[in-house]
Length: 292
Image (tube, rainbow, N blue to C red; front, side, top):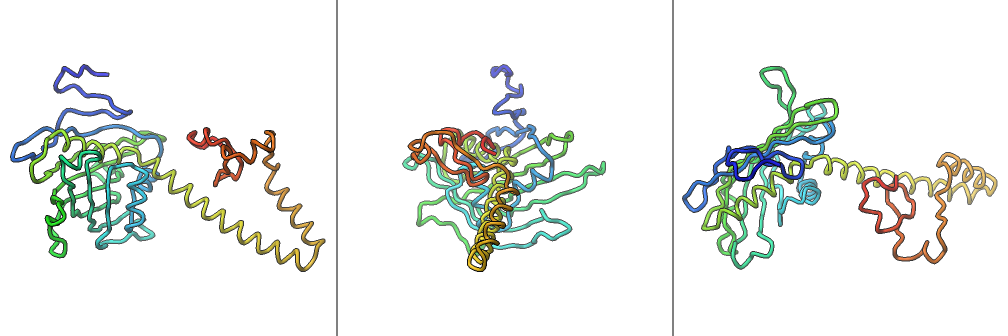
């Protein structure tokens, strides 16, 4: 941990390195320093881009939940450029985002943003492949300021760049400039910036959540199809039903047997994992991939 008394010394926080202030935030007509963020995350560049990629309102809200970035509400207003098979992560859209300071509603009004959002890959002058995510405030004639609702229209300029540092490590750089509008203490502005930037600093968690969601949906569909096939087989031939059931049991591997008592097995403390379908103790669910 660097000495906090040194103004320009990098500060380590949650595995990321807070570099010396390089951004400017306009707060009530004054300029204040805002930290940029430099750090690393495990994984590949493709995984990172998959984690931050959004293409509609639903995926944008889902990413916000995964990243815990403090957004109160959001909606995708329009799509200007859609991904293709050749460029699956290229996307350009206009979105409306609402932020609020939790527990400070009586002091700090809600802030909303109308931003142009863009994600994709780019090639540097040195031939290096990098990923980027950009949010830039824009004016929208169909969405004026919501003053009647007590919401202040703010503006931002936000950019995150990712590069493959090694086979299993991605380096990230993030910078932001925010004008919160109205009158608000700079502390709350910096807190908002930190939440947004650090939220984008965990794209692999979002990517893992997306993959698990896809897996559970696909597994549920396969199980539903298998149930229909087995039901048909059972009604047509009991012998065929027995053979098919044994075959599926063999392919699935050893059954997941819980050696706890019947009372504990069906207690509210035991729940079924939606990924591996084993019964696990609820106090173990916070362990990532602990049951699979």
